[in-house]
Image 1 (spheres, one colour):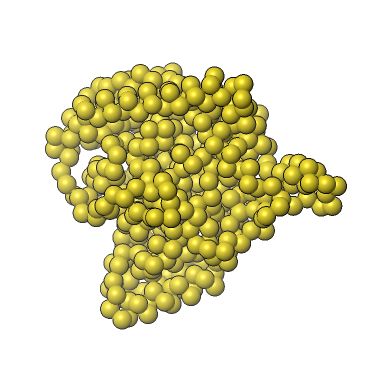
Image 2 (spheres, rainbow, N blue to C red):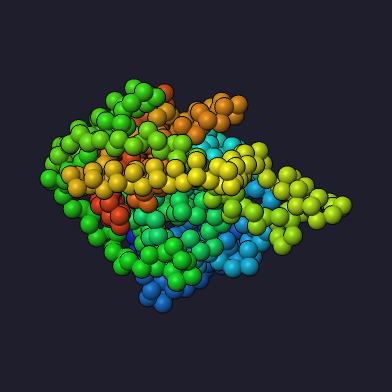
Length: 483
């Protein structure tokens, strides 16, 4: 049963081939057996999962249907979950049990999804490797010596290792798409505002967006259907109708205009990945797509702009974690200042501290205009580049990452080299656009992804292209040895 996709599980449950309770018990046993190798979960919720599975079976017995009804999933550990530890991968929130459900959690629960637990992640979603977690690094099931990508690396590793069919993630600069690429999954970052951020612990509020990680585009469509929708509790949620994301998966790609930016093939891209991207382009041409070279001239400024804006917002968002109201509190503080200083120094890891310091500096009185304001102007130029490109093409295609997964610890002494792994993904966050990564081959036995970008609220188009590609290739069907 562990090899089934979400779509196959939905059909199996509908045909009464197995129950949700049977499936849940099978996957929980598999997690207990295999996850010690991966460290992909922070918290397992066995009792909750079995309770939800039994309730889903009862709903089906009463005639209710639904693609997610009884389907097991996992939640990235920054989605607040009532009565369950929500740690954000940090010592700061190691003892925090959320008093409410995030909107994403409650929507998926209402659809009948069964939550097996909370998945490991980079601390406060800050990282590209899932090495900064207080609970230890997550291993890539394709090679346990390598990283799975981040910050949604726990969700990606768990799905890739067939511990569960799909999981939620969040994407601030590529944190769904990059781990999807490095673990042979399909990962979708929706348009900013498409999925509620209420109850999703913030890293950078103008960039964060929740989305699905699964093995196929079809499964991502199913999970996104349960996650998306307007939420009046979230001021950044957009009141836009939610289409049936599965409805157009089988639409022909005949005449689809695909733009390929020359900037995506500059120095720094592994030539073997470039070759796989060009192979994917040829496959899409066979399906009727028309390829057009384009340019995104301000892409070269994306990394510096992002690493001013994101840390600035992080320094503001994380100021609430002070040892007073909730979270880690130091022992025997001498006074209030000592309480603040030691609680934060003990609670936050080095990567989080680094980004808070960078952000506080960029927002300080003498440097706001020189750094933060300039970064926001570059952000607008990047958005304008995309708007101009989408006047000529329907979607944009390129590599998801410049390199395959690197060895655990290989970039620890040079954080900037890890930041550069996000070079192709962060532009979508800066512009608020939807983006998808899909499996496209292997380099040295490690998975490689191809990224698709589309205009606002065109997630259905991304899913359609990826689904058609997956009907004609088999990269997404391959699973790591031993799992």
